[in-house]
Length: 192
Image (cartoon, rainbow, N blue to C red):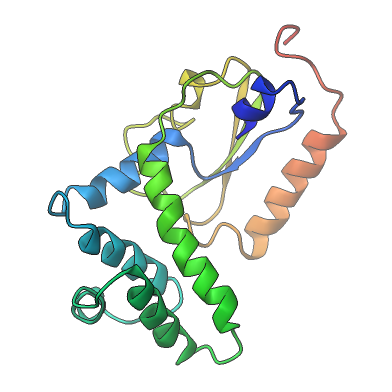
């Protein structure tokens, strides 16, 4: 998105990435795609929605698979995901949850196809979870951001894993890093 803004002559002063990169997402989607039957969109939809539901519930993966896969289409799977989540989270808006579940699938699908067409011209701050996941293994400390950025890549390691580093002390650390970065005088990529 930042590269597109730059191509449209819109300045981008700061880019903070939260435990992710183009390579991180590709590793994530490739791992799941390897389990799927080519051309069976129902399997891809089910896999994505299982991951989405498990963020909110403790329902076993195999039980979710048995529940979602036989359904007729994405809309039916999203509706069932909303039902499963709201059965234990009564105060969550069904409309908001429906939107979140549906867009989660579409974002994963778009990310799976994404290959950076150009380099980002600027500095990047990666806020990386301390507890590594299998998706980050082999990507290096900057998750290969140096390949798609011609500026400086700063990596800050935050306590927690991909899910929990945005909680508790992690939030305070992240807030402090962002605040400090915004307070520093900017050096252009050509100067720095």
